[in-house]
Length: 420
Image 1 (cartoon, rainbow, N blue to C red):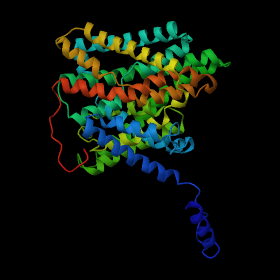
Image 2 (cartoon, rainbow, N blue to C red):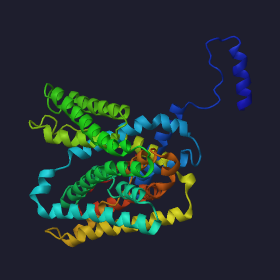
Image 3 (cartoon, rainbow, N blue to C red):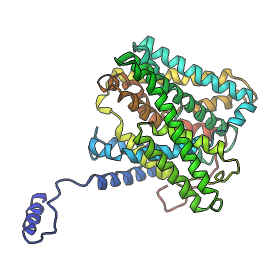
Image 4 (cartoon, one colour):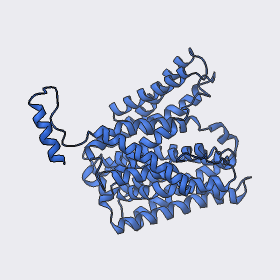
């Protein structure tokens, strides 16, 4: 049938000069659009039929139809879609940064104690596991710890939004996630210098790359936040125009970060923090991305699912990744249990369960570090990539379980007639 169609098309080309050559394959943008629709439908179906988080469906669609399995989306098309993923992750990270309440942290010593315990113990145990048991070099073991020590801000944010969760457990899950992300970004920046020190023949790379990333991220974040606040002051509060300015400023920051080779997730996270800290007149305090989180999530997690290197999977790496996740879960649960405080132990353990997700930010950090020395980095960081791949599927369910068992989710009934 395809050959008949090609013959007829080529016959028409002799008379209709405006026709293009017979398309040998579907346009990558059209394929990617179909993949997004499939991801949406799969996520909604799993959520409606099995109660799974929608994010799981998005990741499964990307994994199934990506280049490692069915190959609907090629590696080239995936590279072309990377700016969309950067924009989606950046906007979500900006929202996480805006929700980081440092005042609440410093007013509450038990919160400070539990977050510091989580950050310290997670990094130390993951580093020890990668260095002593897996046999990584100190630099790549530190890179593994930096990539996997934090929870997944986008997954946690979307789980809280989806469940409309409000209360001490959900607030602490969000706070721990934001702070561990901040600590992970600091560790990531320092690790860049360590990796250069191990592999580069020029010491200048080790000295300047962390400064470039930290200084560039801070400058881009400050510029994006400043532009958003200055322009938004002249617009009605809570208006669609303010939403547009907020998104446009964030996309400007994304573009600048990509242009200057500064990690997008770091720049936009800092932009969110600076927006919250510098908005003294609360111009944008109540301006958010209305119902935009799920649109961003579909784009982000479908691309992340398609980017996972399942073609390099081995049973040994899979077992090592499971071991890393067990160590990581033990570190976070122990940190929350030992920290004490006014929150009862069962609820502290629910917080520890809720901060288990590991997702897009870890994948992007791993690829950023691996790109420095591709001949070494891809194999060295296979462990955190496969750990993130496993938690792409298990993490959202664990966070959803913690929020539901806390009793802080809004109970809603699904309307008849829809897929979700």
